[in-house]
Image 1 (cartoon, rainbow, N blue to C red):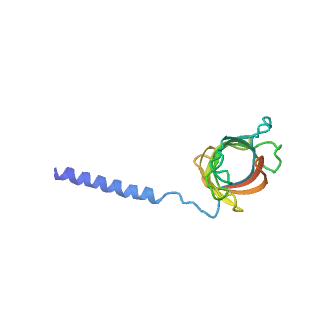
Image 2 (spheres, helix red, strand yellow; image 1 turned 135 degrees about the vertical axis):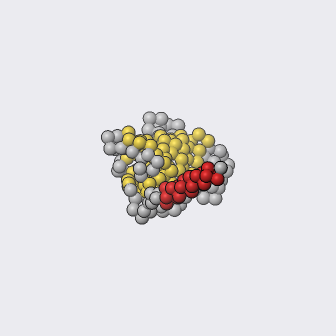
Image 3 (cartoon, rainbow, N blue to C red; image 1 turned 30 degrees about the vertical axis):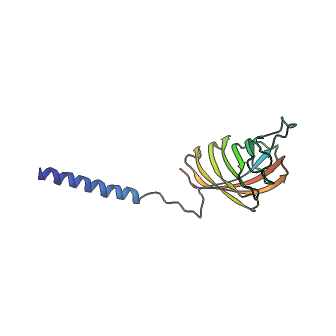
Amino acid sequence: MAQFLKALFSFFLLVLLLSDTVFSSRKTFDQKKPCKQFSFYFHDILYDGDNVANATSAAIVSPPGLGNFKFGKFVIFDNPITMDKNYLSKPVARAQGFYFYDMKTDFNSWFCYTLVFNSTEHKGTLNIMGADLMMEPTRDLSVVGGTGDFFMARGIATFVTDIFQGAKYFRVKMDIKLYECY
């Protein structure tokens, strides 16, 4: 029995030492140098009742009387993503998801969407979510995963409002930096 306990103890000790080796050899990421980097333009044309052919988003909920900052407004979108500022350029991806206004005292929204790529250059998706503090010159949202060419990617999508035309149209420049690429 003592021989068996010694062998069992030795086995567990060996497993413990090997597991420590595995955990200490994890891949490290250089946060100063992204493994992939892109710049895209996000175009949003909100449906207003007259623009069915051109609208890329629609307000599903827009409660009245909750202040001057669109608090509670919920928008679903399927927006084109282009390489340049021209809305009519060939899309490199589609942004499919939603945003809602979540602050009563200032313009602030929360985004959750997937960039769906289906081109000769990229195939797969990137999932992006986070707060868009709209009055700030730049805003960072989290890249929380992906598929295909972007399998399990993580990083930052930096928003800069390029143009804002009231409630009808806005264009945001997205600088995406991925720090985990597989």
